[in-house]
Length: 336
Image (cartoon, rainbow, N blue to C red; front, side, top):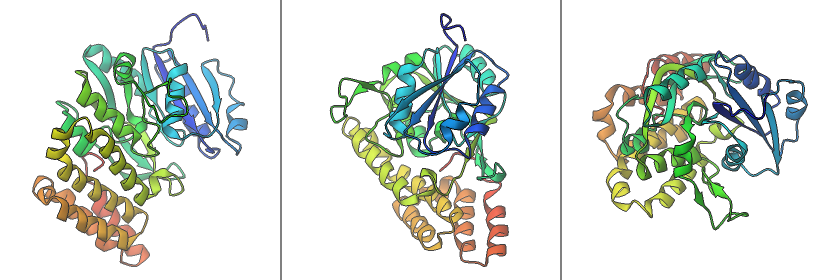
């Protein structure tokens, strides 16, 4: 790569013990139809064969940055600091992209100079790269801060591409950090929900627009051993993120918190179903309805399908898989 030329895109790839997935991730980047990008792989303290597999790649667009294990938010922040692109894209190392993702996001930004955050629909895959028959097909336009909070249309961290100018506007100093003089973009106090916290700060604190692309350009891996598999930790981290943001935006959170929490609980009930945690799924679904029953009126089909999945989780294995597939396969909205 010619280091004197600034790339259009910087793709930040945080890595922590992903030897089974890193090649799929990198191959999807190197096969992009749009070629003007750099890849910043952040080694967040890998102890497996991830680096050995990374070192097999000889493409000059790949840059490696290493740090002690500090978590996903810190790894993304490190990647941003080393990036040079006009736009910053994030791809978690166990996920992968459609070959036209960067091309279509580039067109999206060129069409709208006010666009700060662009995202795409996503499809869920399992640990063997096989489609699960479900995905995230969110609202795409006229996105408000309430939409981001209640429905998180971005869906997951691998779907998002941000304009550098927008990221710079939400950067902050964290006095609790080991390096308090270093700017943060994602909140390193959060081990989960750091992505929706970032998107929500953008929506609440800036005038940049948030819009999505209809095409499913992101393949999001549901990994039972990873962060995405731990439902209890996801809820606790979401609550922590809300508590921090509420300090500066009390009026907003007082108005939208009950509905947002209901959607979050319903989403986690479905994740518990996919993890085959029947009792946990049941409790989460009941709490969702008790928190704000408007989710029944606003999205009756999705709520009833979630209930069907919860009931199916008590059935024998083969029956459960059939009912779950039927209940979840046609639900096309945001991740909540």
